[in-house]
Amino acid sequence: MVCNSPSFKSQQKKYTAAMGSLVKDELLYHHLISTLLQAGERSLIKLVYFSRDSSDHEDPLNDSVGVSNGVNGRLHFAKFETTKINDCLKFISANKLLLGGLQHQENPTNDRSFIKATGGGAYKFSDLFKEKLGISLEKEDEMECLVTGANFLLKAVNHEAFTYLNGQKEFVQIDHNDLYPYLLVNIGSGVSMVKVDGDGKFERVSGTSVGGGTFWGLGKLLTKCQSFDELLELSHRGNNRVVDMLVGDIYGGMDYSKIGLSSTAIASSFGRAISNNNELDDYKPEDVSRSLLRMISNNIGQISYLNALRFGLKRIFFGGFFIRGQSYTMDTISVAVHFWSKGEAKAMFLRHEGFLGALGAFMSYERHSLDDLMINQSVQIPVDASCGTDTNYNPLERDLNETESMQCRVYQA
Ligand SMILES: Nc1ncnc2c1ncn2[C@@H]1O[C@H](COP(=O)(O)OP(=O)(O)O)[C@@H](O)[C@H]1O
Ligand SMILES: CC(C)(COP(=O)(O)O)[C@@H](O)C(=O)NCCC(=O)O
Image (spheres, protein in one colour):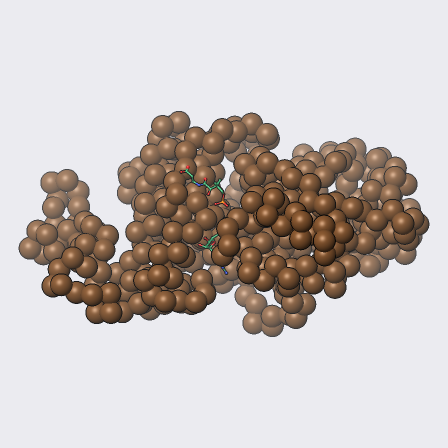
């Protein structure tokens, strides 16, 4: 229970005192929709929103229902493929995410008229949101949102960061006093590498255009897959050795031990495809997909390590929806970081990997700051974007962050 930590306890008092005025100021919403973050044509829209517990609605000024301890509710995470923007708009309407609870009841004409948004979608969908929902998208800087989101998750959510090596997931206990500096690597369509030195203190130190969009784009061309999930699914069944040229292929089955390369190390990604006049059709889409995933993950792991080395950073946190909690992706990135750093640096992943920017935008609401939200417990309750529930949901499996919510309390600064 994160809120038991001393720092949160002491903050609790401060926020308790301010709570009454928050309610009076009508700044708290029954449903508060936060943000939308999106990039290119075939990427994802992310939503983070807060819903107040129904038991809190009856008497918002009654201490016993949460005012003295903040307002109880849930922080929800949902995502939509960009091509399904209309589903997203319907979701927002159907769930009345634009209606302020207290505010709406007391002053129905004074509906909230903007939501926070970051990333390319904040620009691209601006007109659509205005036209269909009558609201403006208030734009927040993407890098700033990423960092705010990552800092919040690392500080406030238990079991958020984990290492993944040889199929073993291990949650990392974050020491709040020893979090900075770290390298944040966000693998979205492209990849941003940000050195984080504190709340709001960061520098984007590097990036690469070979990222999630590359995997999805090249994969689509090479395998004719129609969905990202299909491409991922293929990669599970593939064997990259059919496509990649290994050190052993070059050195007659031997290791090149003098420079530390085993015979099974990849010498050249896709290198085998140059032999035997093979055509694309001669390769199984599964093998191509796996090789592509390996190549891109490995490359990102390596560049990340080099940047960590540049600034003497030992901890690298990876986020972005490219990862999708995939074992193979995380394993490859971890191995790359481990191998190049000779075990000195650590790759860590975030359960809410794809929501960093959206969360950061959520925190950017006036009077919301990193400290305003406190996560009690990371309870997993699946909330499907189309409003169904997934009974097979297993929080320990991949896609932890896809459709979940977590219990939290909102306090006013
Ligand atoms: N269902 C999906 N549809 C499209 N891309 C997906 C999907 N799931 C994961 N991805 C991957 O996530 C990447 C986008 O990551 P994301 O963190 O959403 O970044 P962006 O800010 O670019 O939208 C895509 O390029 C792709 O590799
Ligand atoms: C331009 C971006 C910040 C946009 O973020 P994204 O939508 O990919 O999450 C990102 O794609 C990126 O950092 N690209 C790499 C550009 C480069 O450094 O070469």
